[in-house]
Image: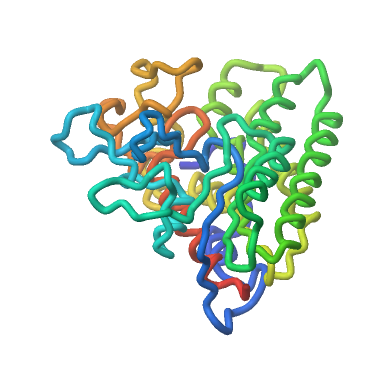
Length: 330
């Protein structure tokens, strides 16, 4: 499906190859890097919340159940993994928030420092929280994806504040994030940093485009996202040896531009039935495979709610990140 506000980018095959292969930020690994820990920084896209203190936490996507016939309240945090779980599982690393019996491991080494609604300004606090427990080491993978809420906050000030000033503010935020990524890399840890998914292709953008006639709001959100991502990219030390850059924005833009891209059959509609959400505002946090819209599918709908990726979206992002992790010359 092609939306009228999506500008053309590189051919999707090139986008997917660039996002996955080391030729866009490094070379072939001489010896595969195997982390002993995965440490997740960022916002709710990287969060598992152990609500019931039973090591079976909830996620901000379509939460899975133990089985298709299980009670609606019988969640399985191992089902429908988010992108950082996808990466961690590949290296047999477990997060304490999802360490279910009967196969729970002793002393899981994964750490989630990410927080819901986090902004770039929260990343130093997340870094400091990790250092206070255990400093970064050369055998750590640190994942970073944040900036969505910075972009949304700036967008909310339009048109009272013009696009030029909003863009300048976001370029400062993007640069600040890049410097924090460099700070982590300077400790010897290996960093996998993802660009923010293009907010101009979200269901939120579609609704804003329909509700406002002053300008093409989806295109505005796309430009703001692009400038934030560009500032972050230009400020990281991207020689491939310390930092792996994941181009989530370009990948998902290509998915939306081509009908059926990435195997997704719906790239415009949230798959979660948000009328069943108890969150304020409604969100995917309490969404499960039992609370989807009619005929909705968590695997082939791109969006869980107006801004957050579905289980299928997380799977695609997880594969993208794992490909970068395995191909970068760390």
